[in-house]
Image (cartoon, rainbow, N blue to C red; front, side):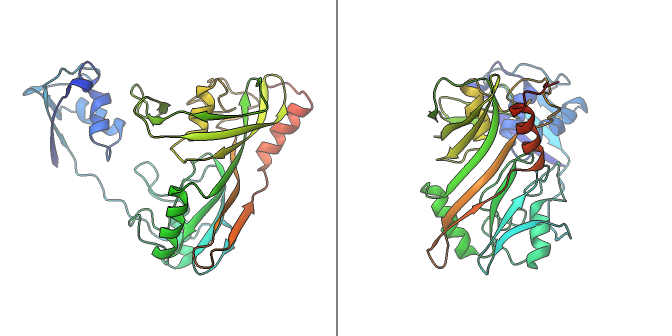
Length: 309
């Protein structure tokens, strides 16, 4: 069992116990902390608190006792992956929708990392640790498309530097709600953790700089087919920015309507184009991924004005 103690600061006062604790303990999930509260493992100023929505006050002393979390380990698994390009320095993989990039508490196996370890015989960069070997950047579980994986640390450092200087080309396709007044535009709005919902990101004043460029490809009245180009790469960036300008992604119930149109269960977002300078040769390389079948089906329905329900 592990014991943690915290003193509540001014900006945390007035908020729920089960919201503040996950922010203070990023390695733990909100559900695990809620379970800890229900099991009597949390004390505030020496008093056991069983109420998840208990409101904290500035200066409160919180004690929490939890079971030591199981250490995650990425192990090779024989999972088929679509390798678009490979050499001694890197892999370019076309990730399918539904595949998680690396192991985490809710997905300890069956990830892209597990598959890459099997394919490469454990020969991946070590910069991001044992759970995320080779991973230079990520895309969401339900976002499909191109992803680069570094096979060694020098390649990883080169690609990470290109990400930092915004010199990597990352172009996405998405179907969003509502029509646009313009043909193209830019969203320049900082992104950080949503203070009201830890599962979401949001445009917040103290967030990290985030810039997304977009242009209209096709208009369908209540929906629009767009291209989105990342200048930065924040968590959920396109999803957050499009929702912020009142154009959430079709199927994205976290940031948009809960109703399922065309039977779409999750965001229609595809990482279509990935371009970068090769870590060893310096030559510019660019890859283009075809739209997934589901994406094409929805576009055909919109083009033929078929019912959404």
